[in-house]
Length: 283
Image (cartoon, rainbow, N blue to C red; front, side, top):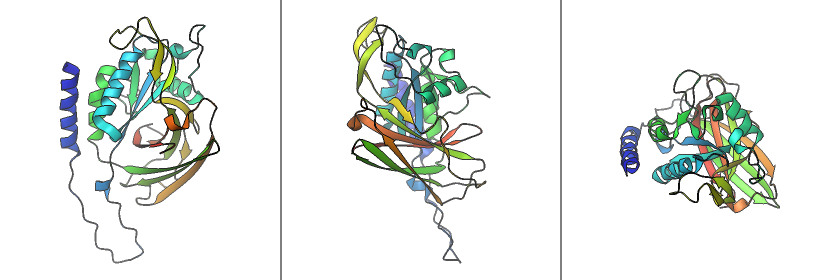
């Protein structure tokens, strides 16, 4: 009950911070000058990366917190479960391997599982210099703080799926002036994957193991560990659209109706995510 009360307070604070006035576009003497984007129509969205593994006994409880936050914030919060590190290694009684090359690279770079799971990243913001990790109890307040920020970019995802092949057209647009270099990272996640999961919370399921655990938001694929460069412009050009098309052949165990595309823009130096978007593979 205390957690629910805290989350409700966080939601209220987030809504108050997010409110903003509409800015009318300036008069244009040159009709060829692009009109500045209307940032009031762009939602600031947040990515929660839940670093997990089937051998992590506390991870099912963390997944419940992630789902509660997702229910609270709806489309503004995107959750991605990254199976990486020691607790994600296959075992004789848990042979499934849900690790990805990108997930392992991120886990090593950010040092998440080395700090102990469950832990996570929130828009890959730093809590202090070089420290990106937030424990489960800090996810809610950190997410609320990120949502209170003004949006800096928007992403549109257009998916087409046929003959076991997914083609995604990703359109990105910066809505505020920014310095630096920005990449776009493309991911595929999958829901409703069944498998064994260690567990020590009988409020979540059987202990010490849930034989038919339902894994949600699982990272399945990325175009690379660190994405593709969006632009060489520094500062970025506000209002210009950057388009990337990505085609992926689906693996046999990826169920299209349970999959989503997650795309996010991040600062290549600081690693901070400035915008994220999600779309179903099949609507």
